[in-house]
Every structure is written in structure tokens, then in C-alpha cells.
Image (cartoon, rainbow over all chains, first blue to last red; front, side, top):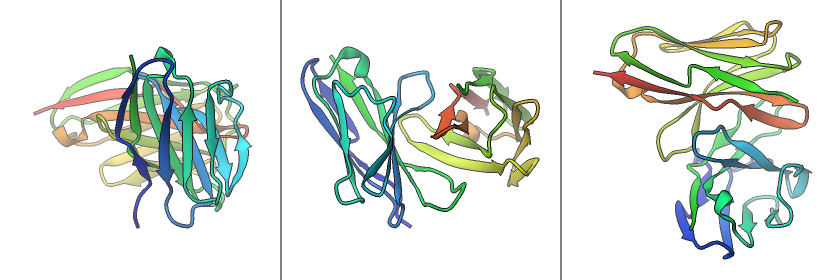
Length: 114
Length: 111
């Protein structure tokens, strides 16, 4: 099966600019997650979708971050305006609705804010 | 709030050695625990998922154990190879959060 696809792989922007990341989950996976991984840390959940509804966005900095999954398939994560501390790898993951099913991760987008 | 700690933070071993990576978590009310591998510049690859009713899972040279009551898990790698060099992450669910991760153990296997 095809894995989780993310683009772009790398992005360099200046602070106060905006940026968007795209994710296409594994076909048939109803649940989609966005994680932020700062260098030297484990990934931290930003937002979780089930189909096109938000399950948990309690750790999403909503003043600058937004995410959508309009048709319940692919998703975009946007940062506007970016800050230096947003430099990180942004990982997308998906899973099926089966109880205790494992998460499958994409290769991530590495964002550098200068 | 669930907190996950991994020890050691980094480990360097010669090829062929058996090694153990440790993971501890503060809230033992979990329904599974997952070990991941992360290569530089890559995403996470799931290695093993242990259900709360299980005590261990094996895949090839990897064996993961789970002691829920004490809040601990170990990942045992037998006969290590240079290709095993990567960062190994442990993760558990917490409340509505599907996975809370440790900071990982960075493993280097020297040929």
C-alpha cells in the first residue's frame, strides 16, 4: 500500500511570512494527525482529524496555525505569520478506525524560519 | 498528564552487541505502547505495538516488553548491526491524545 505522502520536503521562509504543508494519508484511513517535532525532541500532537471533523486541537497555536481536511481525505496545515520557534519537522500520520490500530507516518516537511 | 522518558539519550555500541533501550511513562492507564524508529531526515517507522494485555512482542531481532504496573517498557535489540543506527522513540496514548512521545534514544552501531 502507498504510504502517507507529504509535501514539500523542505521549506525555508523568513519570519512573519506564511507557509502551507500538504498531506495525503493512506487510502481508507479515517484518522489524520499533524505532529510538530523540534530538533532533539519527540513529536508533539498539533491536531487530530476524524474524517473531516476535528477531534483534538488543544495544542494547536490557533493565533497562527490553522489546519483543514475539507473532504475527509488530504489535509493542509498553515502557519501565518511564522516565528523563529516554528522551525521544526512537521509530520503527518494516519490510522484506521480499528481500535488500537498503529499510526503510519509520512517523511515530514522540514521548516526553517530565518 | 502523561510524560514519557527514555534512557539513555544516546548510545554507541560495537557491531554484534545485544542492547537494551528503556522507556518509562507516568500514567500506567494505557491501552498500548508503540516503539518507532526514525532515520535522519525521515519520518517514523513503527517497529512494535504492544497491547496492554500483552507482556512482550517480537519482530526479528527486536523484542519489546511492557510492565504496565511499573510504567516501563524495554526494547531489546539482538546482535546489533550498523544498519540499526537510528533514533528509537517510545510512545503511549494519553487521554484523547493518540500518542505522547519520549525524546528518543539515538543509537550508533559501530562496524
